[in-house]
Image (tube, rainbow, N blue to C red; front, side, top):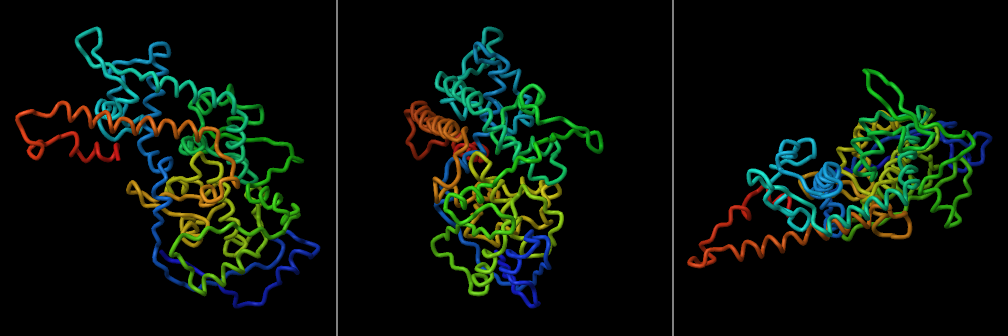
Length: 409
């Protein structure tokens, strides 16, 4: 992993000259940035690699989508013939046959023979039905909280205060938005949202807020609680650091980062148009945007590639993914599930620092129910094994199927 330390080679205003000048805004003074390349090996952190709520999302997301499909098709009986959903694998994000996927989770989906032609049907188990009801209760009870998270995401787009619906739909899972919020936004969102037409016939979701209303980031609110931030533009806020075991920054990087922490903090909700994109201040804003973005998500984590679509709309640089690598004490990068997942360390190292998403507990219960399927399948295979053969000669095709392993481990 390449770590880049920036060292000043030019004469620039000192930080106290900026903070106490007549123009305290971070865009009102000369900004600079020079580079010294320093390379450091990427350090794996087993703690973050073991967080089920993050890494089981690969299986949970299509499972929830399939559950929602069954509920919407049969809201009273919670059952459906396989013929209705067998062709919807791509739409639901299931990379294997839908029937096979359903059979991987008998603790969630119960199979039975239908009334006609002996076709297989699937219904939700009683515990899955109870979890679905609990999930819907969360959406009703915490609707304002969930809408506020969506509003904050859109407000990070700067003056436009608009994001394409397609972009928001791509982040729907991370934000914890129910399907109907984006399917019929006019009926489910409050009056400050409006659907607008943008280029190429696409639609966007815009937000209009009172000009006197000020939105604070998690960084700003926590700094106020600690008494180290008064809310004045141009103040410095230091990012909380959580070094992984065995990870030490090289001296050049550590020196640069000490200086980096002292630069003014630019809120993700402030106008950034005057910032020099090649300055340290702009780099600190980028880190602040990523910190705030992950704090809004259910698991406070996301696939890094999923965030690249936001570059144009949030004023992020082309190589924004490098910011995660340059700040290993703030973000962790996990390579589980053959993808790169960016995790906000603060959310898991200081539980009181970032408010838990209302949907987080329900998803944990879904994952717990999913994991019970492993024991059910294991017992089923054991009970169905041939009596006249030794265990060493038994070959279980389901157990050795690579696709099935991906969704059960």
